[in-house]
Length: 122
Image 1 (cartoon, one colour):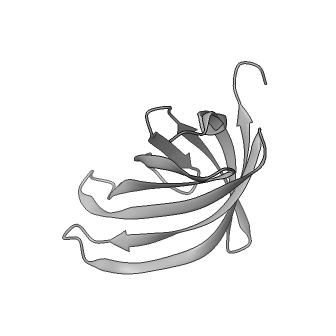
Image 2 (cartoon, rainbow, N blue to C red):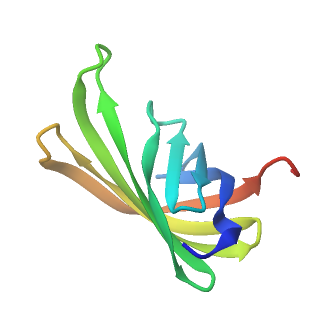
């Protein structure tokens, strides 16, 4: 968790099989991460760490519920990123989907993500 460039809020663009899905991700200095995307109904909570001078990785879980609020499963998301500049990064990631008992249902990898930083100065 040593890369101060990552700390803050980022606008993300996920390439979901050719469809661009906007999102937001926030990295805290203590190593926590909060994420949301337009194709999910709930936020993701997790952690991040620096993995090299210009690279990092993060992961988070998203809980899923049916319209009545019953737990129907969760997604575990992992992303590896690399800085393009101090205000942009790109990466690849994937997700695994589980039922409420923890049985893996399916997964995918190789989704591309790009991000730009924003905040009070932007």
